[in-house]
Image (cartoon, rainbow, N blue to C red; front, side, top):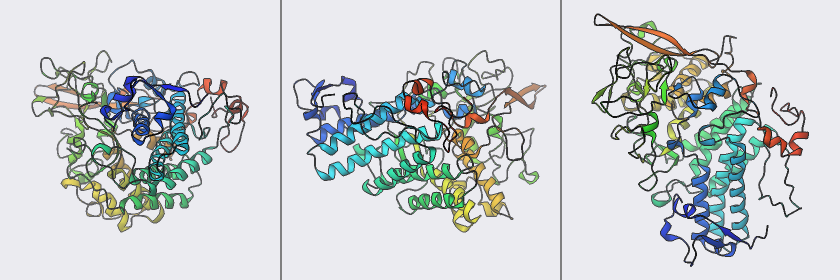
Length: 572
């Protein structure tokens, strides 16, 4: 490619830039056609390219119908046309037929197009005459974004080709086909990049720069990757040093003094760039989303209706504790199976729409047989198949519409401080057991706004094993519908079978609550909703067959520490 050649950008590239205004664009006669020399000669011009990277690389998560909790045991799905969901749930994925995640986060071809965009920016800015301070900061942002894309590929596929320069079919000095790195090499690259750029990024970004990569975002992503690397799927020998590393990185985020928990779980997701938000997809008046349409309950009033696409399972509902802090399985909890929604912790009411709850404090949700939102066990419509709808992350001030006539502007948080505290508590407990630091971290999450008592005030005897279960329950409840459970199931290797040999969480049916009324009395029956199947090979997705066919180097690879067969993950 002639690097002096003209680059053509459609107008959408300009106007969709997340951070810079369209009015700041180049003062040239034809704004849709810009030469390389002009693009990389001014900081504001190069920023437009980088801003479009944020727009393109970060999943448009509040505008998609398919989320990762729907791939897990947290949620059923309200529609039957999601092939990716069905393929995973029925263990029908193949190298030719595989899901690509919410907003295509692990789509192989799209991911490498995004990585190329990062590589182009890094190369062009490095070669430019722009100021050294600009180069250092903006290249660090681009490296963070590239690591962000790579971390999804690494969690999904294990090892992948590591490409750090723009590939050019007219430059024979750079091979177009690249071998597959091992999972360890891919992890090492990601955390090395994040560790190097973290001190070069600002601690905070506000105003028009909100949403850019920060030091805290880089360290949080690094700590999450280290936690994944320490977990059973990637750490079968349970090397304790991996847990120590994860705990240390998470603690470094906590010690920054930049972040704190939002005071109220109810409004956490309604206030953009609050004290808890670490890295988020930005939305605003010029770029909104339709999450209420996708996930709001159907049949509200005479004409309002969402798609009901998050449908919490009974398995998730049962994880919410009672307001006294005890799980519902504890005889001392006060849980009444004939009145199952009374006396639960505050997060339950902020997260779940159940029979008898109200949407907008106005419309009663009736999932009992014969109700306006009656459970649909036959999958004939969009009504709930589990007896529940989601409330979390939805703005109840918005009118529901099947066609998204109202637009929401709430951000989608990829990482927030509550998760950092949970990550730290998990890693530190694996190292030292339930120390004061572990308890302090988990209690901040658990007791937010009077949600529940402290752990030590509820459970009188604690050890590493019992604390581990408490942390896992807190994590599942606190982070549900935030696209975390899918990864937690995989990293802990509990999808196909549990440590005691019993069927894993993805090899038992999803469950719901059937509610029937007889002479004014409601009866509650837990029922199987949908069968699920998960095979051990599915902890790593198959590499797309097209990727192997186009890369003879991958196709020729065998064995190695990841046991590839002709470059493919085992079993496919």
